[in-house]
Image 1 (spheres, protein in one colour):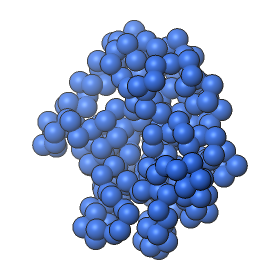
Image 2 (cartoon, rainbow, N blue to C red; image 1 turned 90 degrees about the vertical axis):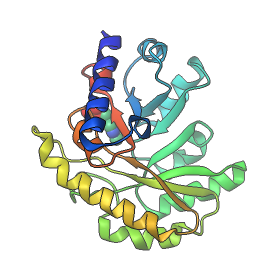
Image 3 (cartoon, rainbow, N blue to C red; image 1 turned 30 degrees about the horizontal axis):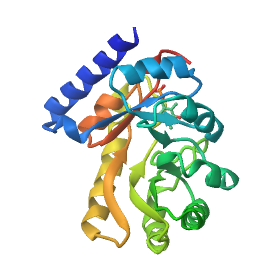
Length: 226
Ligand SMILES: *Cc1c(COP(=O)(O)O)cnc(C)c1O
């Protein structure tokens, strides 16, 4: 069943790339394994997936030692400053930097640990009150501050689009963030290396890819319902 799911997602990635004239190698699939047991994650791993996303620090800490070491763990959920230190050694990319305060904390802890943390700034494009993240118009000012944090490197942006029944409704959201990503990339800001645009989930990843996503985060579409 899991193998079938992965195959279907990979086919859809290919279709969206063909439709939009993109190279499928530009799109990384992250399997969102939150709430799922390590046995299931192992099955997904056996089908060739090496990128896994979790939204809780405790889950990464619990699962990481039980699974192969070549897995890249993506922290995709809201991160509290008091958990930064614990998760840093295990998170290959933190997608959910939603405040300058959190960025400053990651910077501090990364320097203490002697590493550089790769991060994305989370953007609340649709301005939903229920969601975390910067508003688009706050991003440039945030980048101006964060660019001086030598313990982190900003690799791009992440967004969680609204829950919709027709994924076309999110196309404009993805397009907006992609345009902003391209604009920032062109500015070549120090310490900001725009190469990742994390957008699209089970319900809308095809549209997200068509609009320029380089990472998609798929949970239900691989693991089934939570
Ligand atoms: C849960 C989650 C996903 C995956 O959602 P699905 O709809 O199950 O694909 C993606 N991104 C984030 C930030 C999540 O929390």
